[in-house]
Length: 217
Image 1 (tube, rainbow, N blue to C red):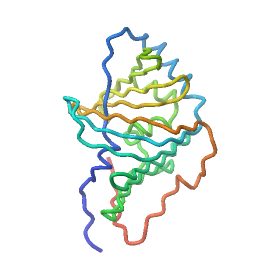
Image 2 (image 1 turned 30 degrees about the horizontal axis):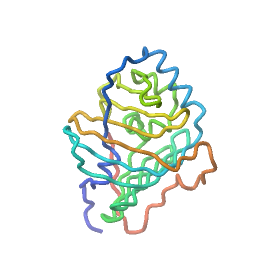
Image 3 (image 1 turned 120 degrees about the vertical axis):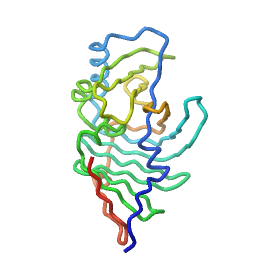
């Protein structure tokens, strides 16, 4: 077996990137905003949608884009599949997170510790109470949508700001910004909330011949 390649693929970089929004209108106080966000997240048992993901530089120029499909079930279960322009899969089974790159024939495995669960998609699969305890939450309405901006209270996160956009009770967009000013937009479509999702989607069987890299933070 060849030595595993430590290179992180562009699609996995897409899934790990982040953006935030700055708003001109006044925002609700943090406690009220956290309560509003909890009201939207607590009823969410599972979520299925297609997505378009774009990475932008500080000037707004598009660096990368991808399309795919995601399934989420609380607590802690996620499947994130990028199907264009290249195939990638991220699966969380509640204990480990698998990042699979079929082109590299490589899977990276990380335990579900605090840092991993603070990645944007996995935040949605966790407890709303834990989420609002770890972030300062601000709220405003923008173009008829409810926008919640989360600022981490700890420096040990992968983004500096995360914004969730809701159309009534349904999450339609995520906007994130990392420490370099790089921004990520994720727009969801074909959304199903609290539908029937096959539990086996959150199991990952490592394909034969695939190099396995186990990472610890």
